[in-house]
Image 1: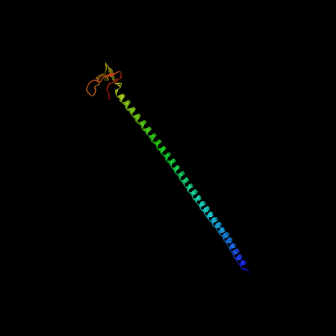
Image 2: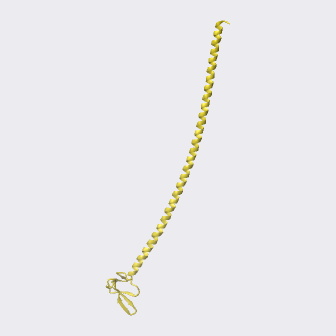
Image 3: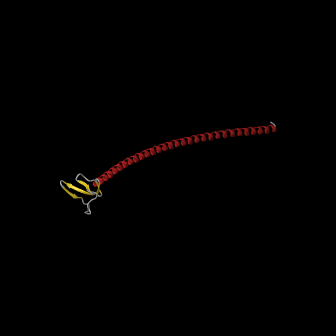
Length: 153
């Protein structure tokens, strides 16, 4: 075999080897890219699942917090309403007591059936006996109509 054939065979073999090497390199690069893509897709899917789980947990916590706040607010409203009712009841009792005290004070100025207002002075009578009613200062108690100017009792 002539030398040119040998050189041609070597060159052809080298050319085939370079083409095979190039094809093999491209094949391996494509496989590696596919693996990286699959790994990235798996990692992204896992992150998405974790994010979704975290979001669900966060929503559940928000819902629980909102429910608790609503219950707390409801309890607060009930307490305020109860306190308002108690205050109103106490206020009504105080006003009634004050009214009774005022009526008692007014009644202490009113002449009773054993007293008369004669010439602007309170006169006590018991049977056939008549005496002037005197105040704390020892003076006769003035009156107008059926009311004295100072308490009688």
